[in-house]
Every structure is written in structure tokens, then in C-alpha cells.
Length: 413
Image (cartoon, rainbow, N blue to C red; front, side, top):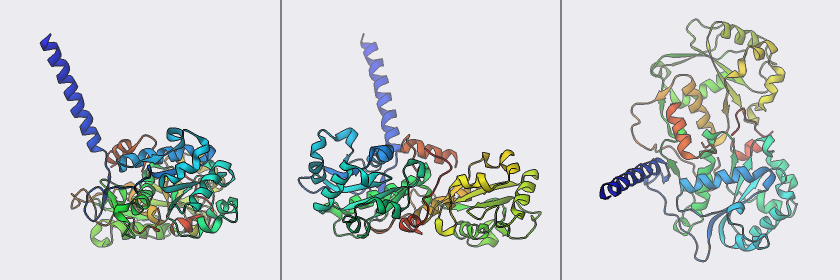
């Protein structure tokens, strides 16, 4: 009997150790200045650090993800979410009063919801600090910031849209969500008693994509065809980020009309002009596929650079290329603002870049989101799954993005 009890206790102890190690591996937000977790505090008498205001039809799934991820990034945070915490719909104003910061999740129908407007008006009447999160995906209620503003009652528009509240765009592609989560976290921290004297709070997370320093250990010759307007500018962005000294960095960019014999990759830059401004591009892509030349596709989402919904490419791309499986491989989404660095990292990795050996530390000093008004990798599965993906696979700020058409994404979660 004693032996049996000992065996059971041993199994229990081993299980507890394994569980503790798994928890320890989940990364949390740190201060760039100290590399330590920030001490989250709350005003006396309040209950929630953050209140999630959203409309059920287009925002429920996203805010649930936001709450779950924030609770892992900032383990002490208390986030109000109706499905978890609402006991009385008639007491919405009391929940607002008990919250330190209010998050407005902006999606179609938000300002037409009676209860959402109750939350909005109560937040403004009580002078609560706001953080605005805008849905990007049109199929999930995303729209331009102007379209969302037009839905808002005129008397509320200035207080919400003209007060320079922190604003980020919520992209439903896991690699980009950490950027938005850090902006939300910064807004919450800056309103907590411990950081009221700060105007910005640079944050970092171990292993985050935007911190990664990459190098081209193997020579890469990237063909940016003149027939593909915008491809050279994007190639230059990649080079500036990861191969500033091209003579020694292993990355060569070619811009000849014909494919250079030394080319290892073709950069196919997809924006509103692709396949319509120059007929040569289709022939070059067709030939590259026949020659087994690696094609790296980049989908521009910045309206200022001709960003458009991915569905457009099924209308303008020659059917021969579509039928041949050109879009079988996913294009890398190119978002503007703080999200752009993540796009460049993913593109560089597609070109063969690998983590630079000199970056052995856990954090990068340049990995920051600065300023309470500076704006925007997670999947629904949680942080641990995201970082597992990272290890295995190796606006314009937000308001500028919002001035054009809402970004579309090729891969949804």
C-alpha cells in the first residue's frame, strides 16, 4: 500500500513539474528598459483593468482572443468580457465605472447597437481612457475608419475619433496579432497608477518576430522585375532591414527586364496594378514556374501603396496561372505601420534568411512600440501554439491604413 501511494505521488510530482515548465515557457510582456515584467496596478475601488466593449455579431470572437492572450502576456490583468463576467445587463454603466480602461472594438454595426452605445456614452461621461481596436477583415465586419465614424452618432464622433486615443488594427493572421496586443497592453499600463508619470512604455516579448535579426547565410539573388511595379521598392525594404551592406550580406537584387541566370527567387508583388499595368509580368511568372524558380509572393495591404483585397487577383490574374496553382502557396501579407516589420521578417525567411548568430539574447533593444498614441501573432489556439509555429517555421500608421479600403487577408483564423 505504501509503495502504491509513493508511486501515485511520484506521478503527481512529475506531472506538476511538467505543467510548471510548460507555463514557464509561455512568454510574457517585459519592459524594454529593464527586461522585467511590468508591475500592473489599479486605482483603488476599481475591479477591471480593461473593459471589452464590442458587438456580438462581428466582434465577439476577436475580443475573446484579445482577453485570453492578454491574460497570458500580463498574468495579473483583469479583463471584463460579457460572456465571462456580465451578471446583469442593466448594470453596464456600473461595470464601466469599475473599469480602468475601456476598449472599443470597432466593427460594422458597433455604433448601431443599443448596448454598445450605452457603453460608449457611459465611458465618455465618466472620462474613461479609451483604446480603439479596428477590425481589418471585411468578412468579419471590418471597414475603413471613416466608414465606422459615419456609423457613429455625430455628437460622439469628436470624443472618440479626434482625441488621439491609442488605435490599432486587428488582423486575423496570428503572426501579426502580438503587435496589436502590445499596443493594448501599453495603453492599459500607462493608465495604471505605477506608470502615470510616463508618456510611453516600450514593451517586448521573448521570441517575437519583430525583434528577430536575420542574415542571409546562403547567397540569395532576388529578381524584382520592372514589369512588376512596386517589387523593387519592397525588395529594397527587405534589404534595408536585413542586408544593409549588400556586398557582404548575401542578398543581391536584380532589376533586369529578363530573368538573370543567377536568380534564386522571383519576388511577385501583388497590389492593385499587378497583371494589369504590364502584360510582361504574366509571361515572366509563367516562365519562372516552368523553370522551377522559387516565387515569393507578397500581398500589399497598405492602401497608400495600392493595397487591395486578395480576391481581386482571381479577377486579374491570367486563368492559366490560377489553374496551374500559382496561389496554392500563400502570399505573405504586407501591412503598414508597426506591423510592417513582421511582414518583412516573414518575407526574408521565405528568401532563406535565418536568425543571425550574434543574436543569442532573449530580447532585442529595438523591439518597441513607442508612445501611448503610437499604433499597431496570435492564433485562437493561444500563445504557446504561436511560438511553437515560430520555432518550427523557423500607419502608414493605423489611421493611414484606415483612410483607404479595409485590408483583406488571404489566411483567416
